[in-house]
Length: 430
Image 1: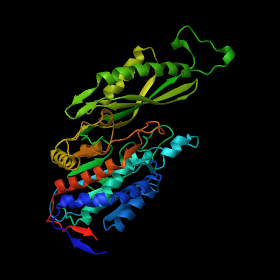
Image 2 (image 1 turned 180 degrees about the vertical axis):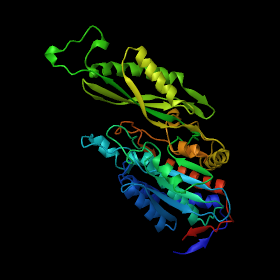
Image 3 (image 1 turned 45 degrees about the horizontal axis):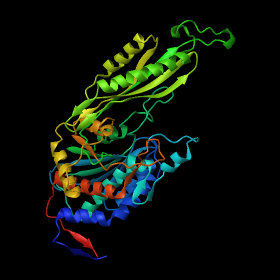
Image 4 (image 1 turned 60 degrees about the vertical axis):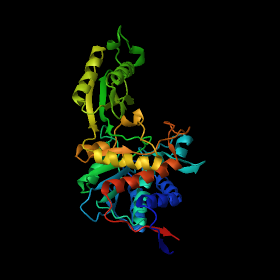
C-alpha cells in the first residue's frame, strides 16, 4: 500500500489521527488479550501474545520468564539521543482463578465482549485494556515516523495481584503484590519515569496506599456436644470457632474507627484506608482469620499491628496476631515532568484539566508504589470504569471512546516527556 507525505499535519495530529483510524485494532487487541485467561501466576500465554504482537508490528520485544507458567512481556522503542526515558507499565494478571462453583454471571464477566459502544470484561478493566492502549500508542508513534529522544518501554507485567505466601500457599507462585514489576526492574528494564496504566477516572494518581496482611488465631478445646459446658462468659467458652465469631464483630468495629481516624486529604484527592476480613477458617480447637489493612504512605506496620493486638486484648479476647505481608505505599517524588507531560496530553485530547481521581483509586496498592520505592518517579492514569451488573464490584467495563482517548493521551505523553529527536516523517496510508 502506497505511503504519501502529509506535511501539513503536526506530529501530535498525525499520531492522534492514526489512533482514531486504528480504533478497530485497539478493540480487537483488547478483546484478544482479555479473552486469554491469565490469573496471577499463569500469565505466560498472554505474555507470549504480547511479544508476538510487538514483533509483528516492528517493535522490539522479548519475554522475561519468571516461572514455567509466568512471564513479563517487554516492548522497546529505542531513543536515538540521550533523552528522557519512560516505562509504560500495565499488568496482565487478573487475580485468582474462578472456582468450579462460580456463578454464571462471574464466568460471563471473566470473558470480554463489546456491546453498545461499551467493552466488557474483568480483564479489560484490570488491566489489559490499558496494556492494549499502551501497545497501540507505541505503534502509532512508529507509524507516524516519530523518533523519540529517550527510550520508551512497554511492559506487560505479571503478579501485580499475587497472593502473599501464608498457610498452604507458599513459594514463588505466592509472592504478594507487585512481584512482576519488581522482576521487570531488577532484570534491567529501568527508566527516568514510569507511567502505570490503570483506571483512574482520567485523574492523575500521584499516591497509593500500602497494605498490611495480618493473621489472627485463637485456640480452644474440642468437646463432645453432650458434655460441652459454655461457661458463664465468652472467655470460658471452649470453642475457638465461637470466640472467632465475636472477634469478627469486634474487628468490624475497629475497622470503622481505623478508616475514620486515618483518612488523609491531600492536594490531589483523599485517601480512605479501608480494612477487610479476607477469610475465617478453623474448628473448635483452632480458628484463624486473615485481615487486609490498607495503610496511608509512611504508616508504621508494627504500630498498626500493635493497635489491633491491643484492641483485641482490651475487648477480652485471648488471641495471637502475626503479620505475613507488608507492601509499602508512597507519594510520588520528583515526578513533576511526568505529571506535566500527562496533564498537557490530557488537555490536548480531552480539552479540560484532569479531574480529581476517585477516592477508592488512591486508596489501594498499585505498581506505582514499587517504582516510587526504587526511585523511578511514577504516577497512574487511565480511563474511568462504567457500571455493570455481573461482577461483584459491578464496574468491570469501560467506554470504547474513553479507551481511545486514553491511548491518545499515552502517546502524546511519551512525545511530551521523551522529546522528539527530529521533525517526524508523517505518513498517511492510502
